[in-house]
Amino acid sequence: NGIDIYFDNVGAVFTDAVWDVLNPDANAVICGQIANYNDDPKNPNKIRPFLHKTIYKEVNIHGIIAPKFKNKVKFYYDMGKWLASGKIKVKQTVCEGFEKLPEAFVGLFEGKNTGKMVVKC
Image (tube, rainbow, N blue to C red; front, side, top):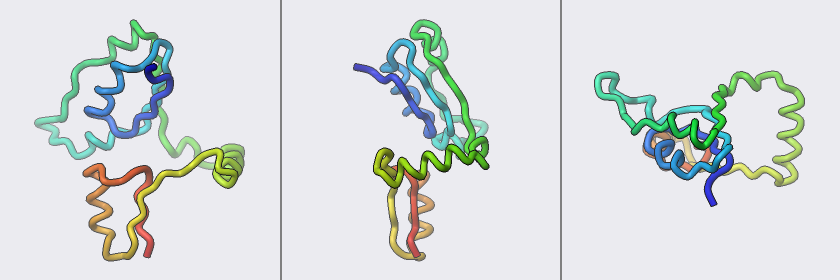
């Protein structure tokens, strides 16, 4: 049925793949582009152009950064309630033990995590 809301914090081929299946009037929130952070500036990871698709599908794109939500009392209050009640579920990858820290860090850039990567010590 297509995608109505897309939250992108990966970029690269993931963004490229999603753009074709966005529904008309879809909303895309761009928060990060981790797949591109380590690109070689002389040979960047390129994806095919897709911005022209926003015209024909009338896709709304909004960029956000996490610090914008700093000191937002209502946001933290509501989010705390939703997390506690199970209305919002957190997906995360948990590694046990301090010795797993290097492996967990590298795993962030290899796509080995679901959601937040957590190392419990």
